[in-house]
Image (cartoon, rainbow, N blue to C red; front, side, top):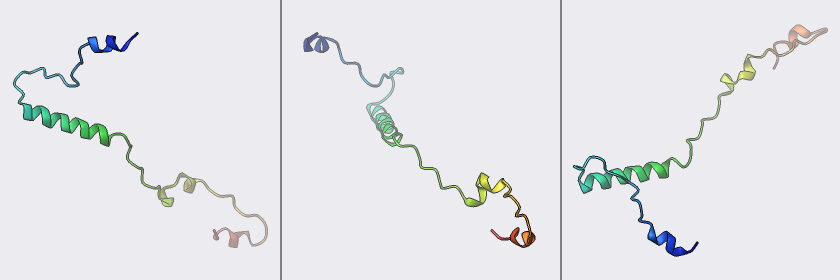
Length: 77
């Protein structure tokens, strides 16, 4: 368990080219795109605030007022 064991293993490249006709410029462009996606994907996009009009609470009916003047109070918020 020493540091020499790590140095003995060859380093694996982070990207393997299967098809041999890729140019160094194409590989560099692909590497830049993958690094950009990895950096941008760290934070999920923020969800917009829900409109009060579309809130599920709006579909529930509030209890109706009882007693004298209940019909008048039913139209008030």
